[in-house]
Image (cartoon, rainbow, N blue to C red; front, side, top):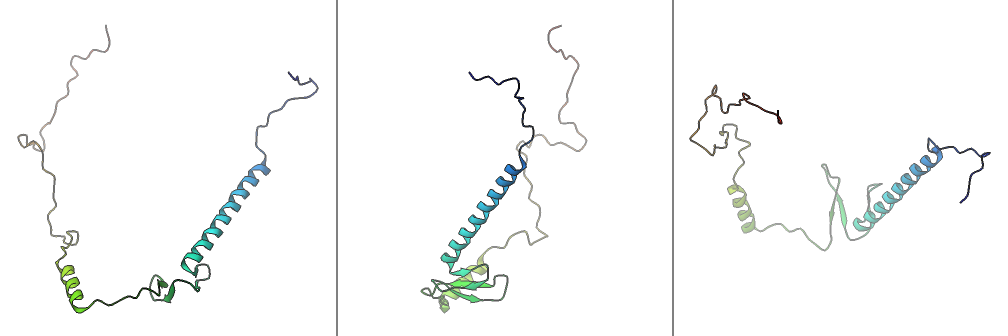
Length: 142
């Protein structure tokens, strides 16, 4: 077993090195930036759109500018959006008209409350439901 000579003082490190902590933070930042860059490159190849510069690229999708909250809409060239014929549009209209409306819009609707399971006991406002008594309470053996 190796003994430490008395001339060498032993000291403990109470505080970590700042350089090691900075290196760990810098490493995490680098890993995060690399991850974002690879994710952005994968999405650019998948959607053929440069999201950083907001420019459509050549590929499977054909991008069209639109007005509204979404500036660009992707459409695959192989799939055409067809307008429904007259019979389908009438069917969709009747289905939409027969869809029941929610009760949230109607303020005059009554509030639905849960019924009590036991209808034999009906309590009035001032009535006591249960009584607690501490007359003869014993704790442990006396």
